[in-house]
Length: 409
Image 1 (cartoon, helix red, strand yellow):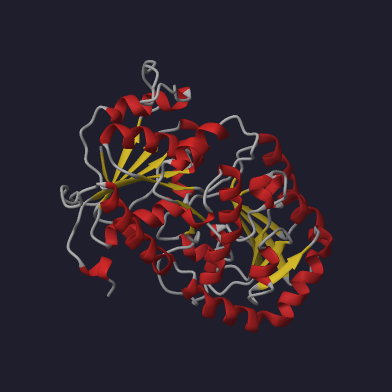
Image 2 (cartoon, rainbow, N blue to C red):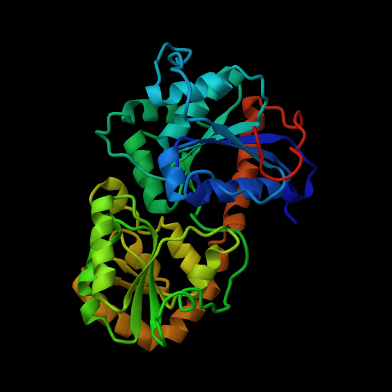
């Protein structure tokens, strides 16, 4: 057992999110679960959002003791401007949050802000409460983004920064003017052992027959390759069916997808949002995973090794096919986990290759996942955070753990 795991309860950590799709955001969910397993009480600050709630992806499930959701409501009167101690007025979308929580006397050992919005909120609270904060970057904005100057300034005040892989760490350091040594990798993975068992979640719900399942899961929009999968499907090996599982936030594109499903007996749409207890049944029910990011901006162009779905497929022994953006070929072909292609027209041949190498690819996925498992990656990060937070003046031990599971405040 590590020193962090062996010691008694020390205190409380706040995870601060501004993006409203918290239910499907793996890094804060895994961070909360891991910290709670190491004896910390964890508060997860999230926004209520009616649009995301309608899609079923707003408020996260936290089925573990020691984790509380702190939900900032969407409705209410206008909040006063939120201002940093140097006079900087924060963007308006953060005013209500800072008004609601900034007046509290809560004591946290440190805060973690996820993405630029979470960084702004964490920094605002940290300055009022006199505690340090960490920046965990998930999506990276370009250098000319309007919010970049504020992000850079607040990022410079963080204990350190986290992102999903080494390529994105270098990119974040360059764009935000950071010392590369201050940016560390927290893999977008999950907690737990490999899951080699096979499931038939999709076969039990759709007339797939004896075909194998190629699964595209998550946000079902063109940037994730959905149109390319549909347009090449007629040329795929006949042993495969295409299952699209996730949410379709764009009504026009939803109509396109529904039309494609009606026009092909081998394409299926699954839009039910499942609970955490069922999540991996979906991945265990796939034979091939699709992980594509059309390089439309700096974030997507450098998303090769950052996708949580890739590590979820790996955990279940499911080989993947991805497009050849930075990091993807190294991860898929360099590690023997799948096939990287340069265009959608190569999908049929890639599927044929996966069929021929299925046993070896599956074995390699299951062999390699433990090296990416979240707890193993985050353990040294926690030790570093404790050390730096103590040096910064935080005093662990002043808070007791919250009682029960998933309390809301």
